[in-house]
Image (cartoon, rainbow, N blue to C red; front, side, top):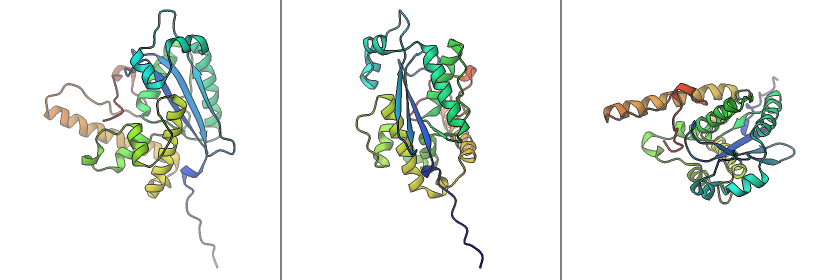
Length: 248
């Protein structure tokens, strides 16, 4: 008697690394990196780390941004490290993650990874942001919701929709943990997507975002709006970089 084939492994049951950032604002080219948080999920040893970035001598973190992520200019100057050191450490971690075949979970990757790319370019430091397949709960959820239900899908709202509790969001490591838990809950709610190979799913998210951006741009054209969504995911090309909202 032939053996019954086992079902495909779910990526939600495998190790993953979640990443989130804190910034001075929401513009991918003009605003600056304040902190990077990472959380290892589903690994034998769970851990998290946050790198604070020491501001430039004349740099200030706006109070509005500090109220969101909880990092003040004073704290960043006291506890922060030089930007090149932070990026070098992050690059080493991302390369180890990719070597282990571990996917990277990033909510609204278009914002976070584009900010990191622009930041690394200005600092002259290479960071392996494209080495691992990306799982973006924002794009995954967007794909699985009818147009009328999409609305304002912030990370905070997705934690409620997928019944994930991480306490008060804002600090980057906590946001990273919440994004990972949303991704896991998503895979449980939509098992057909949860069984995809992560590299195939990375490519599918590129297609899903491109299709979504096309729909948004068609509506903008009908309404004579000049703003447009870039069809690129998970990174926005430098020439197209603008303010990618996390709530489209």
